[in-house]
Amino acid sequence: RAFFARHGYRFVSVERNGVNAFFADPACFAAGFLDAVQGLDYAENRFQLHKFRQPWTQQFQRIADMPLVEI
Image (cartoon, rainbow, N blue to C red; front, top):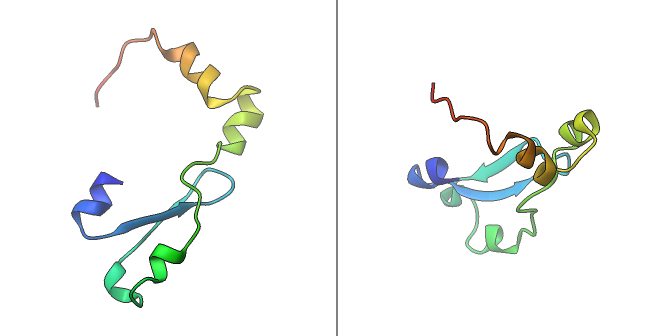
């Protein structure tokens, strides 16, 4: 979100599968249009949930003690 905000875009929503996020340039829409959009701030990634058979909070607990490797 911070990256797109720095470039003038506004976060609109994530889609229901929790994979894609949508951002919009407010200059391309009528005043108030984006304020009226009722998007999702977060959705559980269904693929990850199905694959690991646990929600993100439990997935995070599994890796919480692992070292962070910066690339």
